Amino acid sequence: MQAKLRITAAAALLLLLAPYSASAAEPTTASPAPHLQAAPAAAALNSVDLLNVDAEAADEAGETDLWARIRSGYAINDIDNDLVSKHVNWYATRPDYLARTSARASRYLYHVVTELEKRGMPTELALLPIIESAFNPQANSSAAAVGIWQFMPATGKDYNLKQNAFKDDRRSVLASTDAALSYLQRLYNMFGDWQLALAAYNWGEGNVQKTIRKAQAAGKPTDYESLAHMMPAETRNYVPKLQAVKNIVGHPEQYNVSLPTIENAAYFTAIDKTSDIDVAVAAQLAEMSVADFKALNPQFKRPVIIGGQNTKILLPQENAEKFHSNLASFGKALSSWTTHKIASARTSLASLASKFKTTPEVLREANNIPARTRLKAGSTILVPKLASSNAGDIAENIVENAVMALEPERAAKRKAARGKSKFRAKASVSRKSGKRSRSATNNRKKR
Image (cartoon, rainbow, N blue to C red):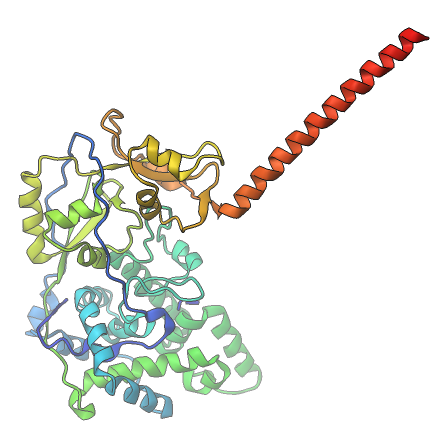
């Protein structure tokens, strides 16, 4: 956690790399978004914008296998201790676990290696998401870190990773990789040592700095291995885990591991979008399952992808042409969603569903509203577009400022009951006051 691409049939290894933390849970299978009424008017997306990942540097070196490309860029000093041996044994004896990690990593690894080479950084850092998340973009930690690089909310904001009701760039393959490498570079410049930089990535630079000062005050060495015993268990195991994976990738035969061939070529390409488009529609046009589409575009939290020309959709190379060909003949609305702001806490999902000709279940799924909860006033949610509304794309200011506040239904009922009780009490006081006033008047008349 933060202080925390093409694989052949032999999908058994990048495998060997998966971390075994609770945050590295396997992604769940996504189900297609519900079919909703589409508004007229379709928009267009720009032509395919191939990422600058044509393996130019690798081609010059004559590498055709991504593993060999990674090995050739190793540059971090090795460590050799009991923890490294422990983790090597753990990975090497779990081929099924490694196979699942390999299948996920095959989508992203080429891009990560390419970005590292552009910056002149050690290529074994491409293996770090194996430790962080098992290359699972949907991974969540107990400390609220997410994505393949496990960014915490605050650190994500420090590196311009947008987090709003519609998307979380901490999960974005492109944005989070760029941010993680920038962060790692900053840590290396701070400590002058990659092992300390990695410890700081896991534990926080402030904690590593305090540990260094403590060792200096005691006249002791300040290298990573001398400081490791002063670090928490997770951080103490962090660098050895990366070293273990590095060892296996470097010499798989030594550990009776057979690395699958991963082609040294870009797995995906990026498409610039200029109009809202439903996730289900984008997947349909690309001839992909929604689950596979989300694996490359995990940052989008709602069933519609919004944003201007800076918003990119990632697609496998072979699906990009299908996307554009199908888009040209689609002839329907690309987006079937718009937004609605809740004006009153008394507004129920049932009434909203009736108004927008859908069901409460559809609204709950589209907005990730848990069961037995209700929306608070001021919340902005997605609702289906109505043919009569002529609603266009969702405005950027809505995207940036939208909030969704929830409360348990029981709490809402209690509030409503208290409100009625207060109203009845006020009414009772008012009636009693009126009776007293009339009685006083009558008494004065008698006198």
